[in-house]
Amino acid sequence: MAYRVEQECPQCGAPVELEETDRLIQCPYCLVKSFIFTPDHFRFVLPRKAERERTIYAPYLRFKGAVFFCVDQTIGYRVVDINHAGSSFNGLPVSLGMRPQALKMRYLSPTEESILLKVEMKPSDILKRAANLSSGSGPGQVFHRVFIGEALSVIYLPLFLKGNRLFDGVLDRPLTELSHGGEEIDAATRLSSRWGLTFIPTLCPGCGWNLDGERDSVVLFCANCESAWKASKGKFIRMDFGTDSSKDPDAVYMPFWKMAGRVQGLEIESFADYVRITNQPVTAGESRRDKAMYFWVPAFKIRPKLFLNLARHFTLAQLEANPKPIVPAKHRHPVTLPLSEAEQAVKITLAGSAMNKKELFPRLPGIRFEPGRSRLIYLPFRETVHDLIQEKTNAAINKNALAFGRSL
Ligand SMILES: [Zn+2]
Ligand SMILES: [Zn+2]
Image 1 (tube, rainbow, N blue to C red):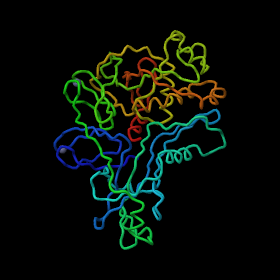
Image 2 (cartoon, rainbow, N blue to C red; image 1 turned 90 degrees about the horizontal axis):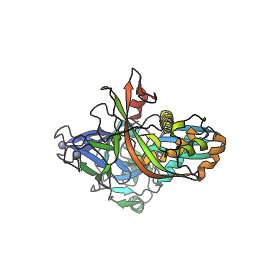
Image 3 (cartoon, helix red, strand yellow; image 1 turned 45 degrees about the vertical axis):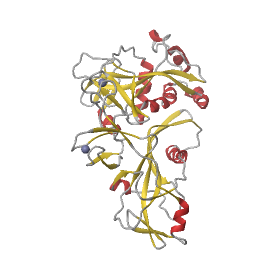
Image 4 (spheres, rainbow, N blue to C red; image 1 turned 45 degrees about the horizontal axis):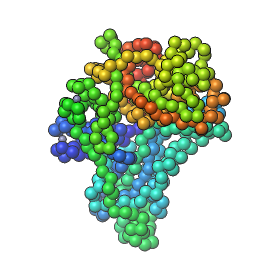
């Protein structure tokens, strides 16, 4: 589930409530929109029950996302949401339990007068735990494992000292007795952090117009100069995009990453190579065999099974769209999965397409995708009661699964 966060509007200081997956915040008072940017992980703080003694903060590493893995001749997937104490300080609860679900968090402020316990756990350690949770069953060899659409964050649990007793500041309950009190804390802490959020005003760098997006969008659009932008290093960078326009005025446009690149270790350069190496039936994409190869991966979060099905389907379809750099005026699904995540999905897409899993899977550890030019493509879908149906390939996306994906 998505946790709630309270943040002050960078313009007027009014409190704004958001979900942890939100990137675009709009202040309900001054209406100013800002894009939230962090160069690495988001850092949150749980609120104290009562503010009296000085607060000490204990870090918890949190992973939420989809894990895909290739075991024996099958592909497994699971959505994982775990957290674990990131400090080995004596007496800390192993995990945060239900605390974050019941409370509103806020972003860690770099200026606050506080003490942070050092983060000793490495991000790879929490990923390892997530991996063990997801594919701990059975003795099969894991040939490939990947985390897609994941959020890795640090959540700080407030603690305080009364004499030599260390208390949980959320529950106001004692955790442990310290033999050397404050000295022990001093040895395990560092003062304040340099970490801080950047708020980027959502103005188009190309023309100064307001950029459009939804709260969980990672790509924003300018309808005035028809451009697309993502945040990088605290500013907006232009992205290559196109829309395969439909004659249907009610078409729903869904975003995909169309990625060129080389699959090293398998020497896939053309679609013919892909068809051969994944052992597709001879008729697959007959007319497109000699064309360059593109991987198509959803640019939106959705249940893992559907994500993989769509990536496989559109990669095998090799749609010859003729997209134009026009922002769909309405019914445009937000881009919620960044390109960097889509690139990581290439190997699992390849594995998912393979008809010869027995031969191909053992080769997966030696394969690497080297990204080339990529483009964001909006494809038109026809809306029915339960599904969205792609106009050219008839691929279906279940609308409930899509709604569920927004909270992943
Ligand atoms: Zn405001
Ligand atoms: Zn513009």
